[in-house]
Length: 313
Length: 296
Image 1 (spheres, one colour):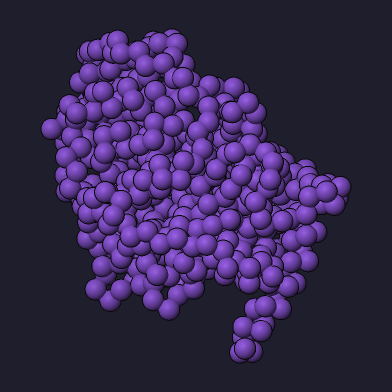
Image 2: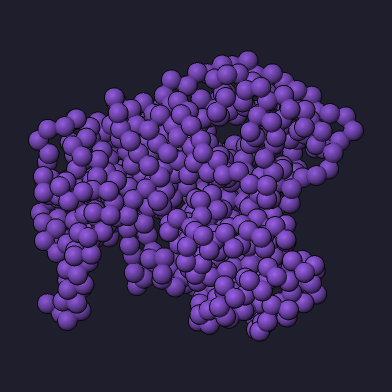
């Protein structure tokens, strides 16, 4: 029995999501290898080598893998897949893009958004926007699992002796897809999916300008900023802020929903938060059904008061 | 005609007016409409690209979820069913590509029981040219779906396959990527913008950090995200016309695909999380509570 974890990185740093997938791998109780595919990603290799529980770090460092596009990355993973019983990736847009293609190349199924390991071949995963939890048994010899990061803690334990590395020399050029550009949202705030506190805004904020009212409060709380689909569709916030069934799934210690009505697609992305505060002027808003603290009132007045009380401190 | 169906038709007629107005806000100019009304037939000129769009019949996201008494699955009997919203976006995008004279034909397909013909008719009413129903009573999982679509792509010689990024029932988000892998075609997943040039398509993708743009060589597989477009409403004349459009039935068993599921659904449950539901009347009270709970 052996497990392979696909590492997500930006050539410099390991994405926190991968550390959650590493915890899930540990729950499978089989030796763990990780695979790093990229270009000039030595820093990523060095940092992962320090983590406890990893036997080997497979490294494919070549210019053809610079943008980690699915076409050749999946083909490369398929070349080593047969040695493993489990292949895991975090259920991020990177993992969701890549892992099903690997599955197709191996002609096997895959389980998305795994939340718990029940037995070595049985897992739970959400369906219907998280309103249903399914227990699924897979008969495939190699089990491909994308991991819901909020369901497993980030691995932190380090090892005194670094894991050994194995260089993969297979070079698979990508003749089908070319990376053109990326427009990333830069922020000094914590990553949405990894933040301890999230403050999220909805249509109730009424404009992109008003949406910025969340910023000073987020900074005072060390929070990440999220948004409902309605707020993103209306252009108040960038797409990568979206929390929900088809956006990001978060489970912070504290989730503050401001002017969010609470459509089930949004609730799907935040319902596992430990404590939920809902601020809304409509006492009938469905968001209150999943709230611990219900604050009915004018959100602009409430935000201004919050800002002032943080300023005083 | 029952009172109820009469109401449906009236509301659809009203939707038509809204849709005409909202279409102009998609960047299509008035001039565009004068020169090229929303015809439903074949376009004579343009590139010979054939587009295949997959549509899945799913439970309405507004419906209450009930489980079967034995916990073996979700009870979909007597529940309103709709076209998967992401697939609706895929149909819309295919129609827009054709309306720009960049495609010859838009073919829609669905896999499932008798009932999915209704979903195919909805796609035809939106403007697709013809439909293929891959008939099966089996519970089809993503790899099998991808294999069945693969077979149809080869039959149809499609150059572009558009799929919703995920179905809102099983939430797998796998089929498009699997299809691309089986076909050995490039993939543009979670697309929020498509631009075609020189036998290539530039796909802007919604990724965790923001947006990414890839240039794919056609033929290609594209899966749609929410902000790619806003699907049109269907008009009453188009609904009537859709009934006359060709709908081909292909039994899944003749497509040389093993329909056997490799995954067994053992049980389903509805998760419950208790919330405190404490009413807050002032900011001071809120901050006090959050400090007590040690979250700030």
